[in-house]
Structures are given as structure tokens and as C-alpha cells.
Image (cartoon, rainbow, N blue to C red; front, side, top):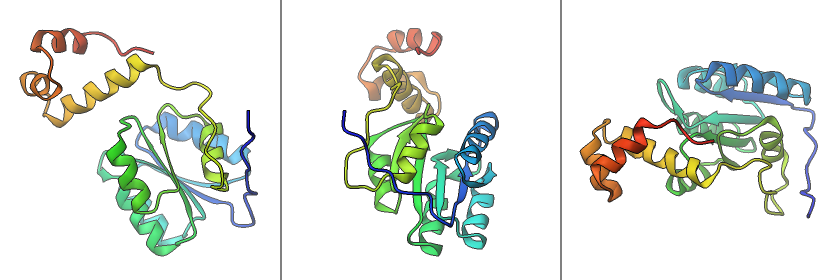
Length: 184
């Protein structure tokens, strides 16, 4: 396996974490502090934008979907205030369109949840010359399918008939899938 070249954290080790999943945010903040980052962890878009403007962190990990808005708003503010920052966008709803949008507005990388601290560190410190290594524990195909169905279901305002129509599946089949627990 090809080792990915990692750059040093550098003198400016400031890291902004924005995620509305409070237990995940706490765990990631502790893990990143152990790796040498000076962490500012917040749960809202408004707090993330304020820190991006005031502290201008060198690194950022931003969740895409937050309770008070879209994490890409934080990415835009951070990119405007500090063009050389390295930004990783995290989301539980991975889609090619949102990945392209995130990279176009300035994200360095895009990771699907569940991502651990090693995945985040590798993404933040990658030199960009090589492709990233494959994740240690990627989501199963069943989990990716389930996430996609859940995302479309939410976008259709939890309307089963509309979701089934858009996914080109029978309504009863969709109801059975929605009634089950998420796969691992």
C-alpha cells in the first residue's frame, strides 16, 4: 500500500470543529487535541462563522447539515477570511453533488460519517499530491443505500409516496425499508 505524504501541523495549529452532534463533537475535539491541535468546538453555523472571522483558524472540520443551517456557509466565511486554511467537510449524507459543491467553494476534502479522528487528521494534513488512502472501515453498501433513502425521504418532507416515486420503488417496499433499523 502506498503511504500518503502528510505535512506537519505547523506553528498555527488552530482547528475549528463545527458539528451539531454534541457527543461526536466532544470525542473528536479530545482526539484532535491529543494530536496537537488547538481546538475550538462549536455546534452552530452562527458560532462557526464568528470563529472563522475572529480567530481565522488554519484548519477546520465542518459538518454539512447543522441545526441552524448549512455548514458550507462556514466554509465560505473561513475561505474568505483565511484563503490558505485546510477545510474538511463531514456529512452523514454523502452525495456527489454536495461533494463537488464543497470542493468548489474551498473545502480541501470531503468525508462521510462515520469518520474517525485518523481519517480527519489524514484529510487535514494530506499534501494533495496523492490520492487519499481508502478508509479503514468504510460504510457497507447496504448502509450507503439506507443513508440515500433516508436523505431523499427527508427532502420529500417525510412523504412516503413522493419518496417512493422519486426513488422509483414501490411504496410498500419503501415502507418496509423505513420500518427497519439502519444497517451497519
